[in-house]
Every structure is written in C-alpha cells, then in structure tokens.
Amino acid sequence: MRVVVTGVGVVSAAGVGRQALWSNLIAGRSGIGPLKSIPTRQLPCKLAAEIEGFEAAHFLRNRKLQKVMSRDIELGVGAAALATEDARLRVGEFDPDRLGVVFGAGRISPTPHELVQAAASCSRDASFEFERFNEEAMAHIYPLWLLPQLPNMPACHIAIEHDARGPNNTITSREASALLALAEGLHAIRRGVADQMIVGACGSELNPHDVARLSLGPDLTRHADPARCHGPFDLFRDGWVLGEGAAAFVIESYESAVRRGAEIYAEVLGVAGGADGAGADNARQGIGLVRAISAAVKQAGIEPGELGHINADGKATLKDDWIEARAYHQALGSAAERIPVTGLKSYFGTFDAGSGAVELAATLLALKEGQVPGTLNYVTPDPLCRLNVIANEPARLTSSLALKVNRTAMGQSVAAVIRG
Image (cartoon, rainbow, N blue to C red; front, side, top):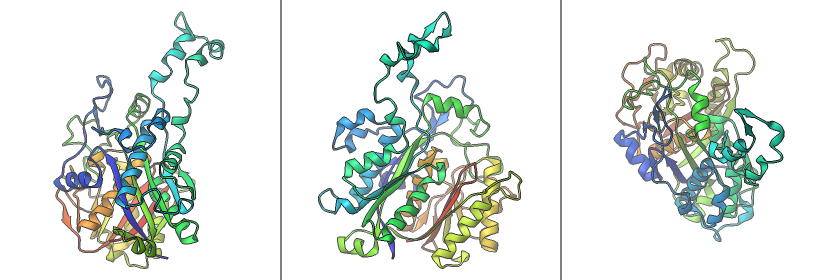
C-alpha cells in the first residue's frame, strides 16, 4: 500500500508554520541568536534557538488543558494543529476511530520555580530536612505537577484535541523519534487499523535544568557569534546550539488522499531503524546507521545513486559527524561523495526528539519546492568526511528522491527514503 504525506505543521525558531520555515531556510536566515530567557553570564554557550511569538492558546479548542501542558507539549500540539489544518483534516469530517497518533518526545524537565516553595519549606539553617518533605513540602506542589513531564502527554493531548481514537503511541528515542514515529504510523495504515495518522515529535532544551545539565558536557559550541557556530561537517565545527520546536505530519494511504482531494507532498518509500549494539570501539560506531540506510534504500527499491539529496543529522561535533559520514560511505558506496548533503540544525538548533521532526519537514518542503536549503556556516570541508555538502546557498534538485537520517549519541539510528 502506498502511504503519502498530506499535511505538514512546524513550530521552530526558524519559523512557525511551513511557509515561514521555508522562507527562512531558502533565504539562509537562522533562528539562532543570544539566549534571552535564562541568564548566561556563567554559561559556556550563550546562544540558543528560541521561538518568538508562539502562543499555544491559539491552537487549542479547549484552552483549559493548557494548565497541564509543558513547553514541549504546547509545541507538539501547535505543530499537530498546523498539520491537520494543512491536510484539511477537520473534526467531524473523518472517522475518529480510524485516526491515530504516534509522537516522539524526550526528557521533559520541570522548571525550578515549580518546586521553590516546596524546597524552601524543608530548608533549615542551610540544610535540607528530607523528613519534612511529606509534612510540609507536598502542600506547595500542584497535585498534577507530574503530568506535564510525562513523555506520552504530547500524543495524549493531540489525540484529545483532534478526537483521534485510533492507535496511539509515544516514541522516546531522542533525535531518531520522529522518523521512528513515521515508521510506526506507516505500518498502522498498511495493517488497515487506521485511515490517517498524525506523526511527528517535539522537544525543548531551553529550561534552566537542561541548559545547566548540557552545559557541563563538551558538545555545545563555544562561539558567541551565530554566524560562526554550528557548521555541520565543517573542519572547525565545535558543537551544537540548544533549541526548541516540533513538527507534525498527516500521513494516509494514497487512495484516501485522492478520495479526499488532499494535496500530496511526498510518498514514503521506506523507513528502517538500527542500533550500534554493544561495544564502543570505532569499528562498531555507526553500524546501526549503516544498516538503517541500507534497509531503507532496499525497501524503496532504488539504487543509492538515484538519491537527489541527503538531509543529514549533522550534530556538528567532530565525533558524531565523522561517524555519520563514514556510515554514508559504507551504506551508499561511491555515490556517497556525489549525493548533495545538507545539515539544517544550523538554522534551528538541537532539541531532543523535535529536531529530527523539523528536519523531516524541511525535506518534504524541499521536495515540494524543487530545491534544497544550504548548510549554514559550512566554510572549510573536513577531509575526513568527504561529502558533497551544499554550502550556505540553496541548490536545485536533480532527483525527487531524498534520504533523511537521524542518529542518537547512543547509536540508535533511523533512515527514511521519500519521493516527492
């Protein structure tokens, strides 16, 4: 059964809505700038990809539910609302029992102010008295405090908002989540248990807890100038930038799309996953991505040289980009040095499960528009990568076939072949 994408919704620092995102990508305008919501004086990275002007209430039919939504959930619900609107999938005009949701989410952290009063009630003379927590602290904690932190909540709220009573699941595999959600949605339609599926992922790393935690590691860029940071596959790359965002997609069978008169963005030809498994030696790192790419290409029934472009994971760390580039060479052979490659995190940052979803949205828009955005801040090619990276300026497509990949730091990998 042919499965196609009929709706795209995006909320990102590089644009809210598919049209805004595409305009900024094709013009080379990045959403990365100085971090404003959190004091940065003692932070090693003072940049972020923050979304401005997004109000979740504009996308909700029942605004009371916003009280139990974290930032991540709000972004996911907003993206799903945009996707269903784009697909013209309106409540009352479809069978709710056959509309499902599979959504990716990651670590959803509470904000410190939610627990300040509770912690203060247990503090005496610069010490924390744990035995007082049950007696006094619990009175200062909102009874539903945990709900907004549960990763299954984006899928739940999207289902409630759109009266989707079909298959419902959550994927928690960091950057790989969106494509894995796409794979599960595709299988649900092919099994005949759903007519349409809302798939995608959301994430936000821009809260004090995550910013502090990730600042302790080596992977954030130390550049203070957005024009110099985060160039995937560039020889002098030094890490990524924290961000926030979400993207959602409506997928359905080709026959259903034609019957509804829906606009078709692309057809999903193959999606496959893999993992590196045990061992941390260089010979094994990236083998999961190699297998995922090989399997997706085989499912699609194409040859590697037919691919028009690769939308890379492109974390812009030395190690991750080397592993990714090597996987392309192993899986695609000699075609790996010819296929155009773009890395788009330099526009909207990295934000757990959501960044892979926004990248997938960019791939779909590229196939629709016939051109691929360039990789920002790519100046000096890394000879250890040997890839045909599209640098800074957009490039015209020579093929309607695209490969989208994502890989986590732990080796969970996924690849999708999509035809415009």
